[in-house]
Amino acid sequence: MTGIDLSTARLVPVTGGQGWLARLPGAVVWVLGPAKQAGELISTCLAAPGPTELLGRVGSRLSDSQAAPWPPFVIVAARGPDLVSVVHGPVEVETVQDGTEARLYGGDEVGSWLNRALKGATLLRSGEPGDVEDLSDLRDGVVRASGFVLTGEPRSKRAASAPAGAGQRTSGQTGDAERPERAGRSEKAGQELQPEQVGQAAAQEPVASARAKADAPTVVEGHAFSSNATVRGVNCPQGHLNDPRDSACRVCGAPIDPGDAQVVGPRPPLGRLTWDNGEVHELGGPTLVGRDVDLDGAVTAGELSPLVPGGQVDSMSRVHAELRLDGWDVLVIDRGSTNGTFVWDEKTKAWQRLVPGEPQVVRGGTVLAFGERTATFETSTVRVP
Image (cartoon, rainbow, N blue to C red; front, side):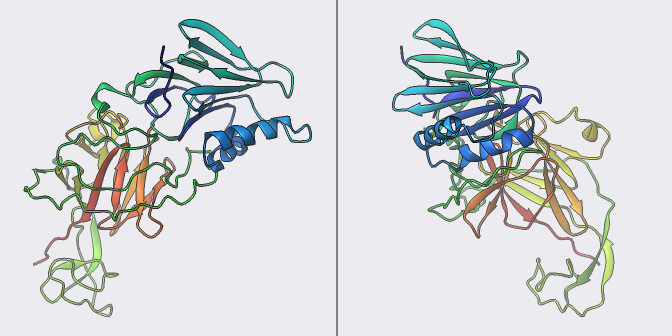
């Protein structure tokens, strides 16, 4: 029987805050306990260049009697065609190996751990019993989780065309634009846990705008949300209201003198998102992005406009991220999504994962990723008579 291939296996977090779950290229790490205790271990794993080095560093650390104890954890790493599991402390792993169920247990004593090769394993489960996130298997990154289920099943039937390799995107979407890969990206962890960033992921190709397509994109108007916000700006000679920090008009390109008198006018719409399948959403005001956002309290109250892009959305959380106004600035805020919200940093050629709840300013031309879906944000302007 063929065992689990970590590059294509489905990793499903168990809901809850009992620990932290990380998916890395060639490895899965689950640590029981709060962020402060889990941080050192996950940082060690994130810094390893591959699964073999990861196992070596962890084994050396566990064998050091002078080192401070680590919290209970489970590590599953690829070694050739098979898996190796390291179980430390009072935590169990249920496995199905060559059709036979078994349990791995690290032990109750301080410093006790179990290192076991798993040949032909098709299922691993650990942690507290509980609900798994519906359709939200973890592609890569770090999330809160009270356990996990790792299975050899594909990540999703709809993602069957995804290229092999942890963290890579699906490419079966119609009109898929060229964009940076996320394997080995630089990212931050979850809401409390902030381990060291993963290297400097360098993309070999520049980010191409998703709007550069032969066919005209489908434009989808935003929700009937009207922002009553006003802003202080500067009119160009043609009467276009602009951010006073701009050096040239966004509409006509005319130069803007920073010393010109400022006027108050209605805040232009946020802009638009052009998705990887060519679909364009005009953003009339603060917006909530996700795969099922209509019943969110902020949407039903009229505070946020709902946006569910067309195409594959299984990598998105039901409520994924917000786009909000702050004067002339547009902010993106991750809402604790499972697969993360990312901003492409053109300077470092790396994806930067947002810490849930912490706003990030986005400029026109910024490429965003919501799970495995990418979109280019572009600003809008209005003309003041």
